[in-house]
Amino acid sequence: MKFKQLAITLSVALATVAGGLAHAQDFKPRIIRFGYGLNEDSNQGRAVKLFAQEVEKASGGKMRVRAIGAAALGSDVQMQQALIGGAQEMMVGSTATLVGITKEMAIWDTPFLFNNAQEADAVLDGPVGQKVMDKLQEKGLVGLAYWENGFRNLTNNKHAVAKLEDLDGIKLRVMQNNVFIDSFKTLGANAVPLPFSELFTALETKTVDGQENPYNTILSSKFYEVQKYLTVTNHVYSPWIVTVSKKWWDQLSAAERKVLADAAKVSRDFERKDTRAEADKALAELKGKGMQINQLSPAEANRMRDKLSAVNAGIASNVGEDLWKETQAAVAKARGGK
Image (cartoon, rainbow, N blue to C red; front, side):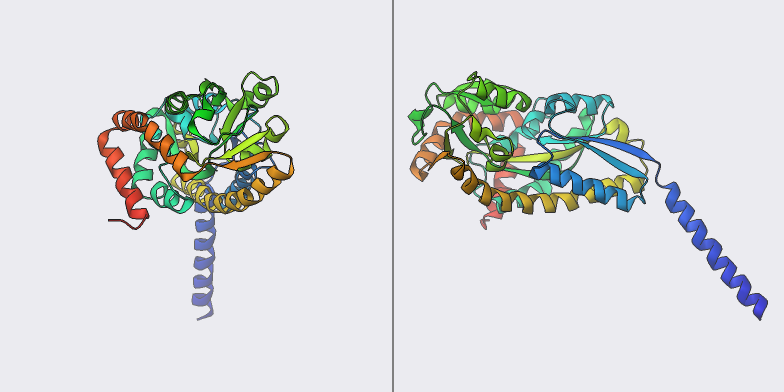
């Protein structure tokens, strides 16, 4: 009887050890270079830090994320190319800078597409968001999750923008993205495409008069030091997207992929909550830093929306009418319409 009990105990112990070894073999020692554009002390930086902690914990310390911020690995466009070539493992950046790689990403640049963050969450995390994200794989990238940059607002050094005509002639830095370039040209501004990494210097040297970004980015990047006027326009909801090099992703085990996908979603939920809480504080802080703030009236926002109808038609044509209609239907559903 004792011998039988001992045999059972040994077999359980061996099975436990074997299971542990199998689990350990699912993970290889890996250093993951994760690039991002903002400073370490930003919503982006905090979320990348949490992502790194989640990955290390779930992999038993085998997978380690080296977070590299402040565009030290290059602009979004440069990092995207590094991921496609397999020279860098991961990044988080704007969906807008991916349009040149995957045209469907332009759907998120549609002016005045979402009325609030809840609508954006429902569409981005739903079937339409996944469909657009999956398109990246054809181009050498794997999308894991959409994070939040937030609603974009306008700053400049010339004058407050209270009406459509106030944009006339303002040299406005925009992302390297045709929708943004076309949108602001249509609204009367002189749209100047520049990488984010060059923006502060361009504002400081008056190469450009203004720019447009969410409150959090305006604050963390200290644009208040070189900009006087802030107009609350909420003209575009701007998502970020966590991407992985497909060349590198294809070398990972299923367990390693799951760790990264799960960590991207945990950090997404944290980042959105953090971003929204920070945005409320950021606007008040920017006012305290001396920025003159005004709100674009609904009537003027509608004038801008009407003026951009040709741009929207161009987006629909570019991304495909089916995707355009699916997106509009998903937005309507999120608003409670049928």
